[in-house]
Image 1 (cartoon, rainbow, N blue to C red):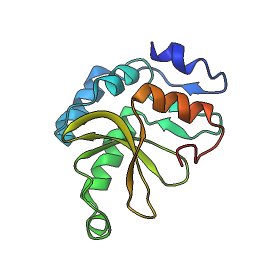
Image 2 (cartoon, rainbow, N blue to C red):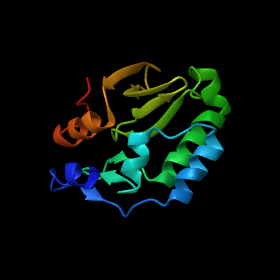
Image 3 (cartoon, rainbow, N blue to C red):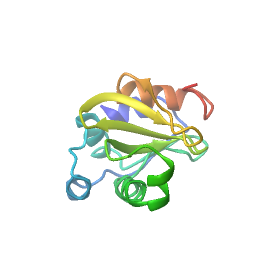
Length: 143
C-alpha cells in the first residue's frame, strides 16, 4: 500500500524495506510500540526522501538514534518540554520534526517547532502526512 501511495510522487526516493529486527530494536530501546501505520510503512520502505533530499520519513536507524538523542540530551531537558511521549520519525529539512504521540497512543501526526517548542497537530494520519509533505513543494506546508 505505502509504495503505491509514495510512487504517486515520481521524484521521491524510496529506500529498501526495514527489517522487523530493526523495528523491534526501536520499540525495545524506547519502551514504546511503533504506531501500526509507521511500522507498516517502514516494512515497505526504510525511509522516504522528497525531491530535495529531505527525509520525510526517517530510516529505522535514524528514528532510533534521534529519539534517543532527543530524550537523553541534558541541554534539551532544560530548554524544552519532555520528549518522552513523542516518537519522532521525520523532519521538514529546516529544523522542525514530525512525531506521533505514543503516550497515550494517537494516530495523528504532530510537528515539534524547534524555535518555540510548540507541538501542533498537522495531519489526522500518517497517510495524510505523507501525501501533504510530498505533494506540497515546500518545507513549511503545515503552517
